[in-house]
Amino acid sequence: MIFEGASAAVAYAVVFFFSLCVGSFLNVVIYRLPREGLAVSSPRRSFCPNCRHQLSWHENIPLFSWLLLRGRCRSCRSPISARYPLVELTAAVLAIFLLQAEGFSWRFVFYFYFVMCLTAIAFIDLEFMVIPDILVKPTVLLGLVSAAVTPYPRLTGLALWNWLEAFGWNHRLVSLAGAVVAYAVGFLSLHLASVAYKRLKGQRGLGEGDPPLMGLIALFLGLPSVIPILLLSSVLGLVSVAVLLFSGRLTSEGLGVKAIPFGPFLSLAALIWLFWGDAFLSWYLPLMTF
Ligand SMILES: [Zn+2]
Image (cartoon, rainbow, N blue to C red; front, side):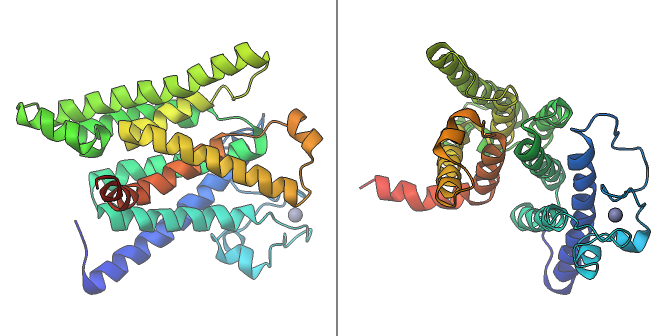
């Protein structure tokens, strides 16, 4: 469903504020999931990580509370990480992009979950160098359901889709098969790279969670996305390392010792490709055909 006029403004506003709240929940997930002894559902109320002061409802409004409190806890005045409003705003902006791309549809619902998962994964991996299974495995299942419920030509690539369609193949089956193959190729691409690196260098170059994450991304974005996303995430990673080196926040000695998580770059590349991949291809492919 695509909205127009005033109803569009209302729909966008509702999605924006709902997603700010989802972003607020993602902050809880990002803070609690990697820490032992904290469950996402308990304690029920959010608290200041410094003084454990329980937040009342008006200290817990996404984005606005942080702005009103000027980024400090009301009780102990210790600074509250800018990550909180950043995650909330990221969630809301991504949801708006998604609504623009898909309208209100089942695909919007499935991809909303996928996009929010990527956001949580990126921030957790950045801080803790771990990609929790609980964010990947159920989302893989959801991706398969999505492929079958809302058949998506993107999963196989349009040329293959049209070709199979000409043979009278069932859309749902083509879409589901495309998703499964994409997962396998995405997973294997990084798994094999990781095995090869370990053989050559005798140490691990990639985290354990990176191949399944690439599989998950490929499952939602389709087989043709695998190479562009691997390239884009590598470029983003290299640029970030260069920036860290130049700004002095990382030394060249530190680079050999300190591991740099790849998950945030994979996630960022996936989000860029989800929203602008098609536009890029329609600009780039005609350049290749003269
Ligand atoms: Zn406090």
